[in-house]
Image (cartoon, rainbow, N blue to C red; front, side, top):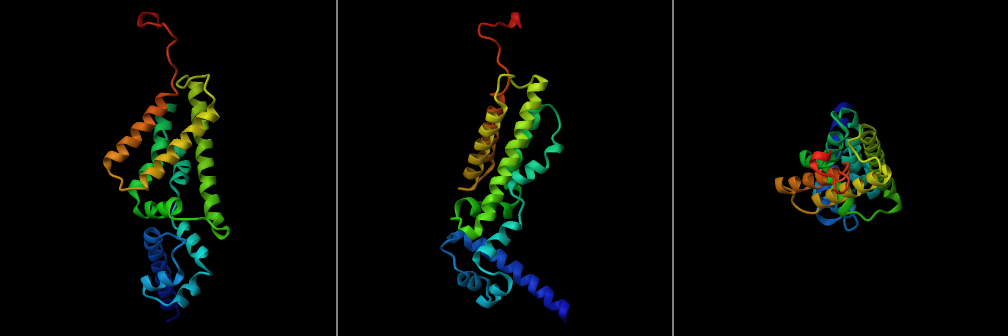
Length: 214
């Protein structure tokens, strides 16, 4: 009997989190009350307080159920094969591919960047996003430096500045991808933007150089 009760409690908690995702996405975190989530989930407000201390606790638990797009890309860096330009393209594409492949990640990340005004109680979730993006930037900088050592990226580049520009690009593409319906055309445009960025890091022939002089 006790085991059944635990299973039922786990099911209720999952239902509350699923419902919170739906309501937060539709109405925004600030405008959503726990009572509203309880009603939408078909439970009492007391059931919410059995599982969560307050709305911030519920929000943080919702965030904990996903791996942020940039977190997953940073963790998978070692899987990137090929030369530095290929690795950087693949690395930059991963957060966007993650958004397309996993509906929950898309919903929760949309809430995190478009439907939330971060209070002090939810600061941890905001800090987590910043840390994930900084780790992503650091990994991108390492790829750029590797490319410079290989000769596939221009030696005169400021590798750190290039990585800052890249994370700004990815951040903007993720924001765009979660602000409206994202289809194949949107993803194709995002990948094209990444390709343009990577191409901009490659060495250019000296001014006045011709094909026979190379």
